[in-house]
Amino acid sequence: MEESTSREKVLKKIRNALISKHDNPYPSLDNDSSVYHELNDSLDITFAQEFTKVAGKFVYCETQSDLENNLITLIGDKKWKNIFCLEPGIKKMLEQAGIPYQSEETDFQNAEVGITYCEYLIARFGSIMISSKQASGRRLNVFPEYHIVIAYSSQIVRELKDALVKIMDEYKGKTPSFISIITGPSRTADIEKTLVMGAHGPKDLYVFLIDEN
Image: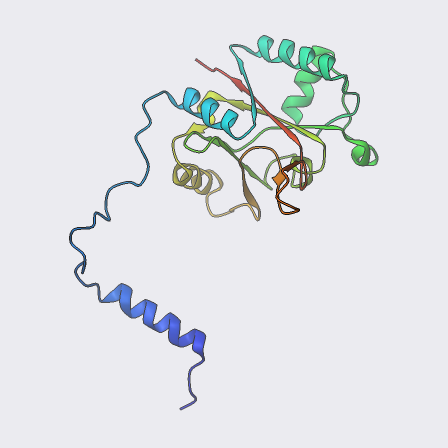
């Protein structure tokens, strides 16, 4: 019989270990309790706190009208000109608010700001889950210098596992080919341990959260 490869041997050991479970050789160690502390605040407050810790910029909006006014103020303060958006719902809102935007492929290279939705917000880490199933696709989350995410309070979940369960259930067997977790704006300190923002994506990340309650 042909000898198994090293990979097959390792996988066989793992399978056998999963089938034949043994008692914990270190009973004094607690392997069942969560390694995370309990979340004492509401999910929206927890997300806002954790998101700002990683240099994200959080904007709370009580209503759709608040969202439009806050966007107009931010865009005016930053003097942004080339705003790019592909999400039909957001495009309609921008038109109602009188905010000019671009959505043609020929304009993408000049995009200064990308505005997108998201799949879920993860309160524990202040993270944003996005996927390739969104109208914004893969590029709009990483190419523009500034990224604005519009989310709703119903999209906030407690843990990463909760977001994964929900997205699998939402697409029911047609899982997106790309699922990514964004935690704060892009950064790196690879070169001489100097922190550089926007190295691999947007240097500023905003979340506008609309309270549906």
